[in-house]
Image 1 (cartoon, helix red, strand yellow):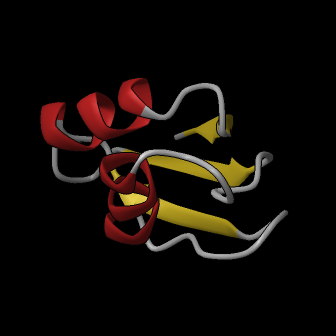
Image 2 (cartoon, rainbow, N blue to C red):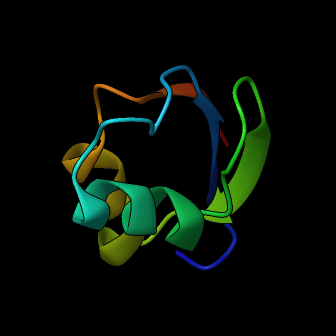
Length: 62
């Protein structure tokens, strides 16, 4: 499972969002619009993506 990755792109602004959502974006390595980050596909990362699903999109899964 360690060799699987997921690429996420930030599509929404964290301005006027709850502190927890801003911290989740930072935890995913995202802080500006349209930035992409390739992360390890783990249940923890999937949960973080689900928490801010309205602010990010999954670009590709490998």
